[in-house]
Image 1 (spheres, helix red, strand yellow):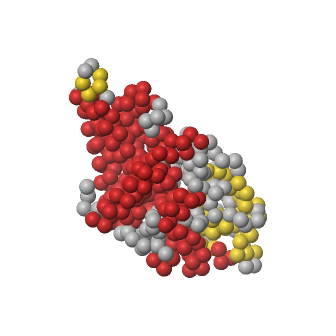
Image 2: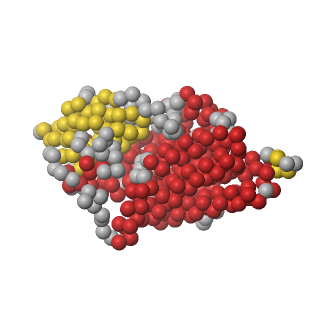
Image 3: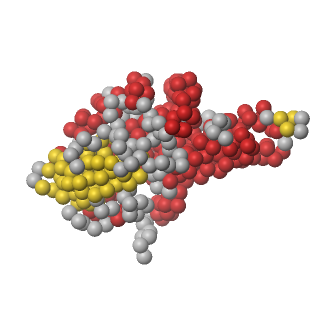
Length: 386
C-alpha cells in the first residue's frame, strides 16, 4: 500500500468496500443481465454518503478533497459494480468536475449542488459518427444569434445518453476549421430540440446508459457557454482527470480478478491438491500481481502529484495505458485459472473481462495515449493527417 492512503482515506475506502459488498455485489449480476440502468435512488444514496462530492468545491456542497480520495471510492465500488462506481467517476473525475474547473459561477451554482446530492447528472458529449479519436473533425455546429447559442448536430457513444440531466457539449463555432473552432456549451436535456437514439447494446458497460444525442436547432442562453472557440487545449486538459478516473476503473477490474483468482485457486482441487500448488498457476498469479501493482503505482503517482488540481498529462497517459491493458490481460488470465467456471456468468469473471475492454476504449484508446506519451516527452505534436 502506497503512502498516499492515510488513515482517513483508509476509513473512506472501508466504507465504500462495505457498501459495495453488502448492497451492490448481490445485485450486480442481475443488473448486468437485464441491462438495468443504475437506479436513481441508489445514486442519491451515494450522494447522502458524500461520495458524489468528494473532489467538488465546498461552496457547492462538495468536500474539496484531492482526487485520490475519489479514486479510492471508485476503485472499491468498481470491484463489485461498475455502474455504481460510474456515478462517483462522472461526478468527481468526469464532466461535473470539468464544469467545476471551467464553468462560470452561474453554471456551477446551478448544476454542482444537484450533482453532489445525486439529484442530477452531467454527461460529456464529444464523439460523433465520424469524429472519435479525431475529435477535431467534429461537425456539431454552434452559432451565436443575439443572446442565444444555436446548436445542430449529432453525438455518438455518449455515456449517460438519454438519462443525464445536462450535456457538456463540444461544438464547432462559426465553421472555424480544426481545433481552433472547438468550444463547449452546457445543454440541459429538457431543452427543445434535444433528442436521443436507442440505447446501445454493448458487450460490457451494462447498466451505464449509452446512446446517440441529437441537437436540432437547440437554443440555449449565451450564458451557457463554457468556453468559446480557441480554447481547445484548455478544454481537453480537463480530460486528464477523467482519464485518471478511467485508469482507476481498470485498476479495480484487475484487482477484483486477482482477488477472486487467489481465492479460487486455493479452493479448487485437481489431482488431489489445490491448484495453487502447481507451478504454472503460481506463475500466472505472480504475473497478475506484477501487472496490477505496476498499474496501481502509476495511478497513485499521477493522482498524488495532482492533489486538488490537474494531473500531469504524461503521468496520466502512462497510468491509463498500463491500467487499461493490465485489466484485459489479468481478466483473461483469471478466466483461464477458473477454467470452465470462468466462462460462466455465475463467477463474474467474464463480466470483468467484458468491462475491461470497454474502459480501454473510453476516454482515449491506448493507441492514442501512446501518441500522447511521445508528444508529452518531446514537447511537440504529431499530425495524424499527413
